[in-house]
Amino acid sequence: MANEVRAQREPQQEPQEDHPSVDLRMDVPHSARVYDYLIGGKTNFEADRTAAHASVQAWPSLPISMRTTRDFMQRSVRHLAERYGVRQFLDIGTGIPTSPNVHEIAQSIAPEARVAYVDNDPIVLTHARALMDSTPQGRTCYVDADFRDPESIIGNPRLREVLDLSQPVALSLIAIVHFVLDEDDPQGIVRRFMDALAPGSFLVLTVFTGDTDPVGVGGVGREYNARGIPLQIRDKAETEAFFDGYELLDPGVTLVHHWRPDADAAPIRDRDIAMYAGVAIKR
Image 1 (tube, rainbow, N blue to C red):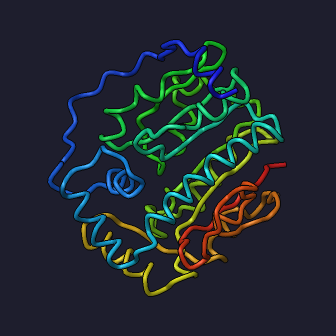
Image 2 (image 1 turned 120 degrees about the vertical axis):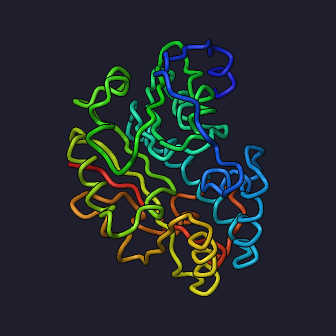
């Protein structure tokens, strides 16, 4: 089915807003490019690779954990589209496009699915066109905005053209809240997004944790922070607090590889994973 959908794709690109030229600061590491390198991507520079190598030296399982988190994203989108009939997705903290992206997964199941992507990283903006290859039946858009300002995202005219917020939306926050420190109230930010979404909407969220290997994961945190990338590690109780007021789907909050794994998934050790995940519905 996925191949059939790709064969139907035409360049259904949304016109993008004009932006001034951006400074990618190739001489300093960037979280999106470090992530890209660790999952095998090509959109990274020497400073990013140096930061990645230092983080892996601190905790060698980091690439496994990151790839496994991306696998969770794919499973959660498939599950919501197939089991719950979700046809609208709001993906915040999109990162550098890496196929399959959210719209490719959702539209392989429902060609009419609509996806709004949001990020405010210059490197992502330069690659945003890769997120625009919607099926003719569906639509996608990219919004350049900051997760910390929910109202500017929810009220964005481009987003409103693609998503009908009077109908259920799946809010996907994959590998983003650990870049928001407690002083910026990440749980309050998530609530503001969910308050703007219709009943029947879903929250899909992952949280970086040191519960499985405090020493190794703590080393990753120190490497990121030392290189100017603020990163906060949280435990399971702090993860569960993001879902207060919503109804968690089975199996609740768990390490990413335990959330509805594929039947043929290779075994992964808990100590190689540093990410909790959960999916909840707003009643």
